[in-house]
Image 1 (cartoon, rainbow, N blue to C red):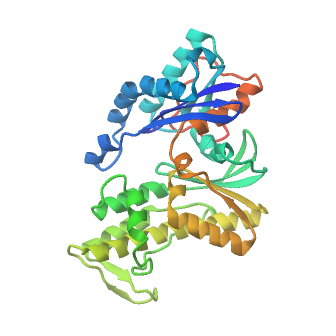
Image 2: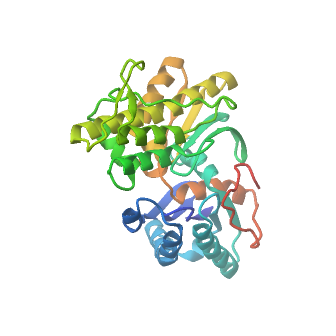
Image 3: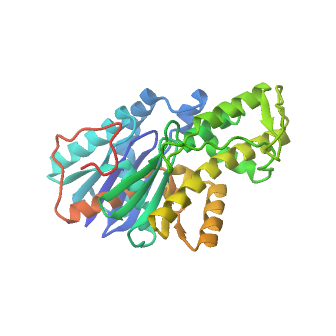
Length: 348
């Protein structure tokens, strides 16, 4: 089956073609240059640029795959969660194509796309535990099969990627900040500053990153930090940090984020009896998270899988992958389906 996927949940405009489950093309148009002056994604600007970019991106995906629109047999489009204005652009375009060409259409949950992105490169047996970690989402889900998902943990406030981006902004590193922190941290001491690790008492597998951001802000403002022993508080810098100090603070902040992702994930895998973990979403491209997850998995006798970096960030190939299974079963959604900014995983 030839499936055209469309993804516009945030600020990346993406289209992809799958032919019998094989990725024939994947085109992504980034808006980083648009949002960089604001230090984060501006929803109104994101939706406006999707309007400009979407049809050229779709044409590029069809051309890269070597097919015409008449060869497409089904459409898969992100319907949520995400920025509702952005979602509406992709969903409206997909509805128009489906109506004009008489094609079946399925609305796909963006998080399901991330959960299944790894299948574009390798088969994995169900069940497995999925750590979904990005700028907008951080959750733990059990995948029992295609379309069968259970959320067992989630962030109580900020997403891990959002925390990294905001931390980078406080350090003057620009946007998007997560990749910049990752690069700086490779040449720094992750134990230079002992930032706190939050533990959510009312949910063993839940996450919380807002306190960590506050801790970084107070440290930079000249509050207190903990020495490497984790015992005696010492004054924060208060003034402008030198280049080496910025690296160390960035590495220490990243280490705290990674710790708070790794520990609940393996605790959940252990207690749920799962021996396979899939890490996906934009932050799964982080080199320190990958290293820590792999070393912990080896120590525990657990398998851990990551999509390649280009499939970690938002893309339409993962949306086509998730939608393909429904389309091949003869399923489709009515053209009345709506975009849902807070669409929960597992919803029809």
